[in-house]
Length: 212
Image 1: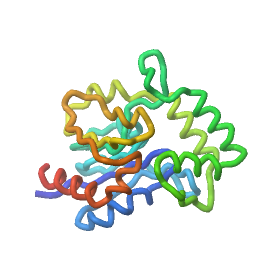
Image 2: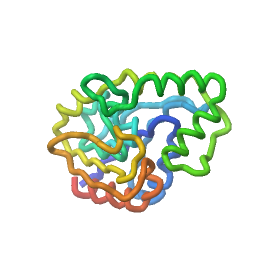
Image 3: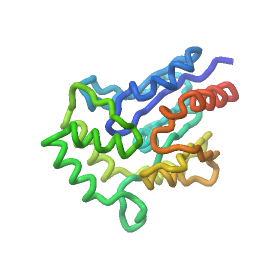
């Protein structure tokens, strides 16, 4: 049986290289990536035309849920969420004013904003890129304020694996994808599980792909 392809989506303030610690342990698979273009690379979000497993981190999971995943055979979420910002129906989210302050600071000092956010996520010291696309970074924050993929999540009827960090500092990620049919695991770690637990993440992905 032909293995499914693997499609990886990164979160805000990162790029496709975020997944390299995992990918290096999955050499037998055909791997494809989403690239948001936050740091100078050309944006790319073309989904595979063959059956694939979608693997997302953080905001990458929400972005995936809002897309046409008709050829997707399963979704694996690391530190993911379906909504990030708070509203009346989602008080546990991050308030919009926090993200709006980040947007204002990005136009003045992007290095400081990215560094502070990555430290919060657990990357210390942060490895900062050489170039910043402030427009795309700001648009990404606006997306975190506006987007809501909870309806898409409710209608999800395929394999769903939800990996949550026990000490994730971001509450929406700590709560994970709230779906009655999801297979959830809580790992000892923070918001960067694909990097801090890269071997374990690769083993999980391989086992799921081989079982499909």
